[in-house]
Length: 335
Ligand code: ATR
Image (cartoon, rainbow, N blue to C red; front, top):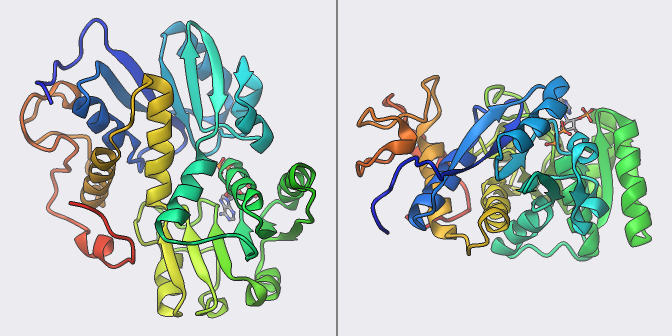
């Protein structure tokens, strides 16, 4: 690695568009990857409210922003605002990556592959499993598509049943399979979970700052389940804690975040993503951001994107750490 040149007149900008974005680990992950490969790129979070989505996409063109990640709640709505869709994103009906080539915006989906790579890392094979998916937003669509492509049987539960029905219809059509749809409530979960081998939370319930809620009552969890939560901040959500206590296998969504980010990095830069660098940066940021302090603060007090010192530049100034949360799960990370 050569010296970080900081921001230059040629720096290309990438970022994250969502609401909320404060909890995101993507800036840590991508800026570390750009630095590791000595690429003149920078990554920033942009909080974009739903009504501002068209203006944000116009802004991406006007400011020549090279790439954006798209997160809650825009993954589905962004589709109508793009010039082109990659085939997989079109089939899934959700976009989590946008590439700007000379003002032409193309949408991609790397969530589906990210989810499968995460399962593969845990030696989990979806083939033939009955899987309950909670949620029917963009992330849930990618996950359902990925699981259906691997031969799983699906039941989708969502707070808004019409969205679950639309998602199920698209999956049924693409894979000629029946998909069960239920409203997300205790009665339906009590009906669906005993026959399931895996439960995936693809809603945002449990995500920072509302960490004391779970989408599932703990008495419905048991050792017959592997519980996957796409919520990665906190690393071990209330759902995962209660699943572990009930004897279920647990998988945090952090690896999905890392894999989808690595694939996005490749789309924007054309370079092989430094996966280990991205993983370390995400884990480090997660360990240090469980407080109210802004966590994009370098300890040397330089503006964080131009910091030349050796300090980790995504370091919260508070003393609080969450090492325990990181080590309490069955995932392993290189350090
Ligand atoms: P993304 O595209 O990132 O998945 P999204 O489209 O906003 O984001 O989807 C969020 C998912 O979390 C949806 O399934 C949403 O349910 P609705 O379709 O009914 O909106 C679900 N969700 C968010 N907050 C929820 C809550 N408090 N209780 C239950 N489900 C919730």
